Image (cartoon, rainbow, N blue to C red; front, side, top):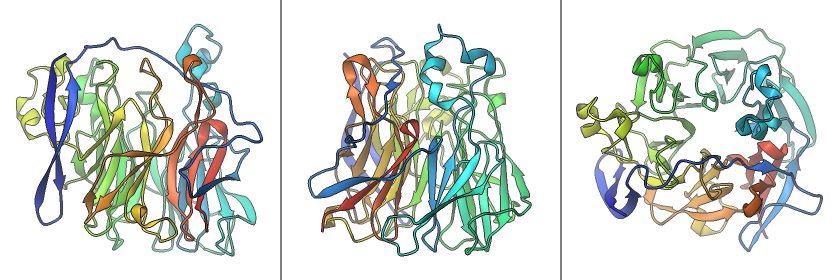
Length: 424
């Protein structure tokens, strides 16, 4: 099998360093594109994910409806967006369609944000309340300048924020319309503010797999990118583009560089194209839809934009093909062993289009001096119950670090949030 060797480019704020780590990619269509949807069976009372020796996994909360995303407030409050992929009504009873059968746990969307309050900051909440409801597939959340921001799938809202309240009944202010519709799993809109609070960044996934709609790239206006706006919604511009479906975002320690996790394209085979986590350059172009993992031209877009293929940036770290890597969090706390300091956790929701299930775990990537310093390694596993029958207990989605240094992991398909603590 022919392979290409490409090199990671690690971009720092003040300079560019090249890491000589090879990623071997097969030729397109070296294997057939397959559908292998997992069946979620949940967790029995005595079952839980598996962490490395020296860590304990406990259930933080359960009984939720698609706990998709987490935001930890400055006061330690934990906000959870309960939202999922909407399935058209006419498809819900179509037993011949495996995709929609596999999405049975996601029919509709709770459309709410739930607040967990942990007053003593020990990682165990005392109260739970519905903070906001009646939203439209909420995902990203942010507290900035006494406002609570919510990124619905089609708009950015903000509400007056009072840190003492457990329910917000204020009328929202609409700041921005966001592109919506299209590719079923690209409804998520994440948000994060610049460390100094001067800007907000918004992820918007593509409307298609590889711009295959009749309208082509015209249907992708302001999609497959990260937008930048002022906190009041003005000054919108594209910060970075060619990112097929970016989700998690966080700021790297030491460099203060924005990083994101990106879901790459489908239907080129089992091992194409690797999902990745990468630093994000202002004005950078990352290839979609014309090329993948740098300058590897997609055969379905061959010859269309050689100028853009030539400028496509190679991502920093490959994290496996079709793993659906979503949430990321740099570990800036001190509770875990030293090897985890400033490293990156990645939640992998898991494949539906690979012969063997891939993902379905939380990865850890060690960092040193603000850049990756080792290969991704498994951190939280055990989500796959029976690979031969494509049965899984759950699907990890987001990862967030609590004030006490514990790690929270949402398991949206199993309606659960897990807490990982270092043993004392």
